[in-house]
Length: 143
Image (cartoon, rainbow, N blue to C red; front, side, top):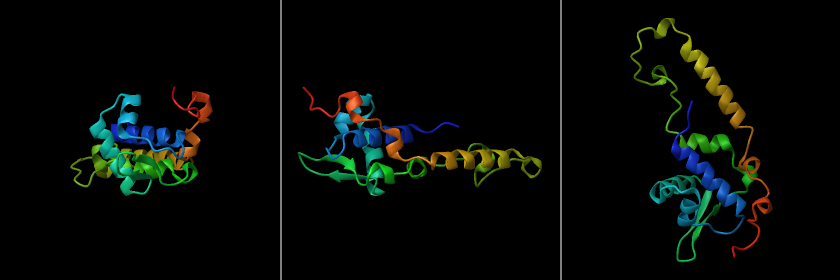
């Protein structure tokens, strides 16, 4: 199983916003820190904003911040919003044409594994991903 870049960038953006607390962070700033596409990050931010995980402030002094405390942002919630599907193999899809599906147990086994993965992810929140900002010198203004 592999998560999409979209989910990866969503987690990175949320971690960055959480580490910076109430300070607004910009797309340009985050894109620069992670060396990722500004355009792709804009799409990620839009998805997270539309789903009340981030809040967006427009204008010259605008930016992004968490819409909720890190402890109330579940990692499973974020993955469900950012992953297009969890079709691990072709037979998970609606239009499966697999001829052996009636006698194959792969779908059930992988479905159980995916359920276990999501159950484990659901145990954690954004707060669990964020170390003490002071450990990175992020509690001090940039020089």
